[in-house]
Length: 610
Image (tube, rainbow, N blue to C red; front, side, top):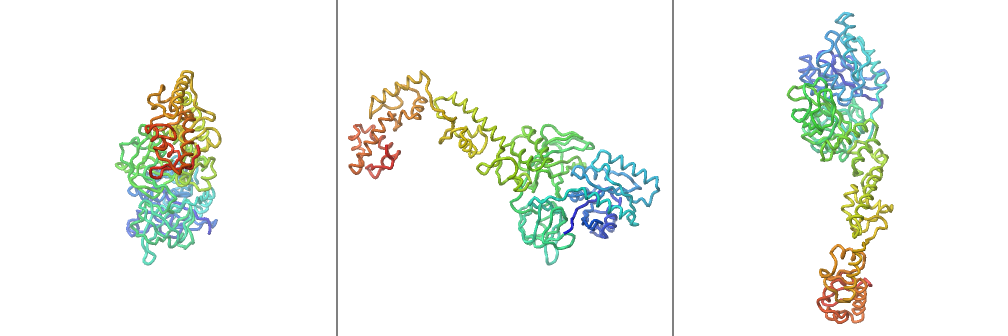
């Protein structure tokens, strides 16, 4: 299949865009009877041709009237280049300016200027028009673009435009296949027999016959029955081409303009996104919370609530915003959009999506992270992954959908995978340093504790629990059950505490198998718990036994149960020389430790040997 590119027209109404497309392709892009009757393009038109290089070019012809800017915006979101049309007899006009600003906001930086209708003016007027073009385009993305003088109705300049357009497209990088196809629907109709057909410019990946697709918003599923490019059947649609899909199982009403056809499970459905916005210098007011705005992204046009980070963004300035949409859309970082003021019906700004799954925390706290993301977009997938993971771990399987990258790009960026999460190596090192410092402080402040409670350690770490286990495996920390400590840490007693420890041990050891209740011992609760953790004391019901004494009692009880074929609590009292007050909690403690096993009223030897 030859290389296929997509080119759009732009420019003021009645400057000859549709006439130019007809002269280039032999196809009239005006599809409706009203357009032909009025000589006015109302909606998008489509045509195609082959350039001298053999390259196929699909044209998206847009309306130039200010009342139909919303239709124009649906056609210029995914262009390789534009043919910007200005009539020599009228020169630069209001929609020339608005169309230029829209193209800039959408990233359109390749194009050809078609100076039309040169046959109906004199040479001086043509020269003045060229000078005005040079002045108007100075400092814009189309500054220095080649200018072709044309009289399309007479066929003059058509061959020159073909050659120049070919050379411009030579400089445009080819469409990238990331294995994540998306077709923004710009037209949907029904044919007798085949049924529902949608058209659009395919990007991000291939769509083949018989694959299952999903419509977003809405979520309807369908099967691709057939694929066409430029009215020619293809086994699959390729990224960067005008593509028509015949969808089985859907009505036309389920795939209107503004929906996107994607593969199920490959996209984050976003109704809230964080973005970078630039306000046009010509905007009458700042963009902030109070305005009423429409967002144009892909082929969609929806109301949007704009929440700037900080104050409103003034004309000519840029800033970060959170956009709230009425539906979920299949968006990804880097998607460009335009914002129009609803009341004034004018374009006021636009920008790029940065995050399709933003956290709930406030935008002001995210400013450094969003600035890093904005920079990463121009540096490539690895930088984008690094920027994302600098904010915290991410579910590994969500990275491609969240960042708009391939599985290979997600796997190849510098990070490690822990428990299904992708974690930045820098973030892991920082978190480890943070945890070690916190443990040092904790051990100093809580020297009677075995260590920091695991939930608190995880909170300090700020990473999934598997990361804590990884640090433990590396020997940086010790994770024992419910506590985390530094390697080699143990409970320690100061001089005053040691005196109380000795006093407690004297009491319980002298009491033998019948110690007093823990509440009567000469030490506080924290110290007694520390003695238990140290293995000095054994808790049995309300009592604390000397650990060695209890082990002897456990051995005697198990031996009696073995020799006698089971022992009751009464027999246990006799064997151990204790009263029922102590015998009942001792018997229950032996069962809990599986030294004995209770069956009915008797205890039998258990699997644990004291």
